[in-house]
Amino acid sequence: MPAHRLDDAFWRNRRVFVTGHTGFTGGWLCLWLAQLGAKVTGYALPPEPMSLYDAFRLEDAIAATHFGDLRDPLRLNQAVAAAKPEVVLHLAAQALVRRAHAAPIDTLSTNIMGTAHLLEAIRPADSVRSVVVVTSDKVYLNRNLKRGYRELDRLGGREPYAASKACAELVVDCYRHAYLADRGVALATARAGNIFGGGDWAEDRLIPDAIRAFERGRSLKLRHPEATRPWQHVLEAVEGYLLLAEALAKGAPDAAGAWNFGPHGGDHRTVAWMASELARLWGKDAAWQVHNPSNAPYEERLLAVNPGKAAAKLGWRSRWSVEQALERTVPWYRAQLGDRPMRAISIQQIEEHVDAA
Image (cartoon, rainbow, N blue to C red; front, side, top):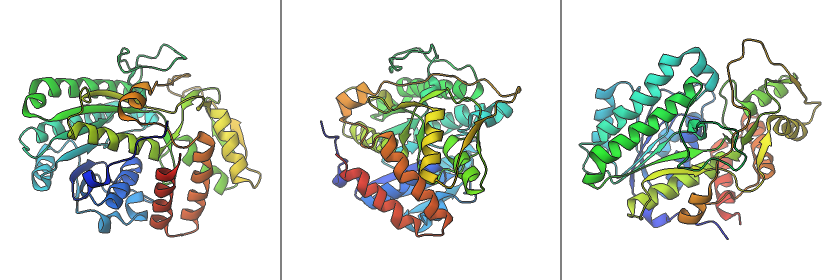
């Protein structure tokens, strides 16, 4: 069945508050919202070098930007109050597994208390009707299930990042039942599989690590080439978040709660497969090798989520195979490294994604 399309009329002139708009997923989300005609207010830390915020010229595309920390409740409350949002999309987080292992308190405070601060800021905001909090596919207690984790499976976390996101899920559930549901605010969490796409330059992530290595003429070093992940293009997850926000705002039954967004079918690939495909697409003798230092932190070997609920109730489905997604990702990086007009190139990719069967 074809995937459901976003309701353009719903988003036109809709006041939307996005945390994490200077980040990777947040940048793509805000660019898409701008194309839909939404009035976006962003709240995030200042952009890092090579950010999509700069590449997309988001300062000119959205209504307002607030640079601040989620752990600054006064500044966050002021930003929410000024925006008077109808829809809130919470993406800001400390999202790197290895950084979380090195700095657990920073990660726990940002991802748990940062989420609580945002929900607390929403409580007095009478304008808000729909809230999507993005957590992670790593929230599940990993039992190496091949069927893919479903939304009602047990939460867990054996390393700081996963634990912080699992705890954020509990914070959301608390605020839903204790404060927001009675006020007519529909609140959901979104658990996306491993996303990739142009513009992710974070450390210790497969695609940006590969691009940096190949561009410098070096081999990509892999810690766990046998690890399997649910890979998908960032636009798949972004569309899922927007469809969910729509459903919440329109009062869809059972929309509040947890939702998985992951690839359908066989797009759960090993790290080695992904690295080989990236090397093939890059060319120029690109290659990878195994490098697993003895002090590497714990990482799960098998992870997959079941997106059946989103397919059945939201009409969401992956539009691009992992091969198609990679074929668009590598040229995107080449274009940015070549100082091309990335906003126009990225809008074209959004349009291609929308038009995909």
